[in-house]
Length: 259
Image (cartoon, rainbow, N blue to C red; front, side):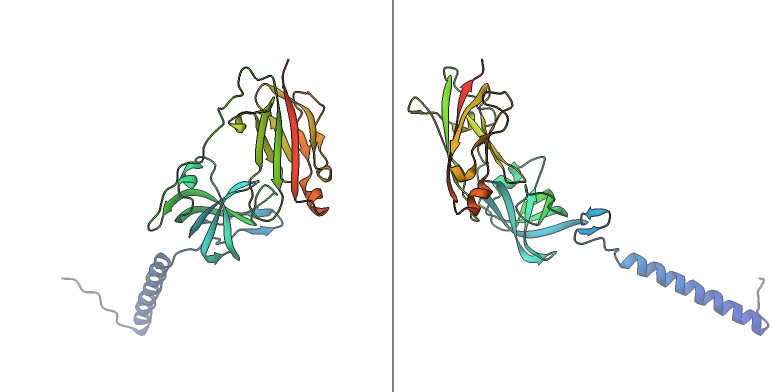
């Protein structure tokens, strides 16, 4: 058997250095594997714009706001990114949020800054996964009237809207009539949008155009283009009305079938 002996001080020093270096490298490798690399916990803004957070898991109570804007709020168990609540957005399947409204839930997704007035809170989470935490009384999905159409015999009708433009969540109350008869569902005959600039638009049902626009003067009832134009809409300025002390608004428009 051949043996290798170190017979001088330089050789001993070299072996010690090799052993010490190997130990340090091994310790560093174990440390890197054991400690996770944390990403950006909250959205940030810099010269290049807004950057969303890493994928985050949040928990809280899911609240549906049936107001002028229909939106979902997650009331957080503990504040996150300086916020007690975060708006939830889900592009592909809103039904998962709808059936869990009122429940305690766990959500997964990135957090980002709300870029426009279309959002109701400063931050929102783009939800990729949501599940209940603990007992949950699941709700029925919110009714979908997207395929409802006006009655074939209806040639004209009147749309009335009662709008409470305040901090609390209050849905717009619609009443659609023809010759004194109420038309149902109203969603087949009317719809609306509230823009990021807080302009309220009212639209007629499929196959109809806006004829006349009326309502609370402080809301400045007007036409988006011109009466009976195919791209026209009833337009209102509820923000100005609220500034003038008018928060309970009566707004409306009439619709005629396209010729």
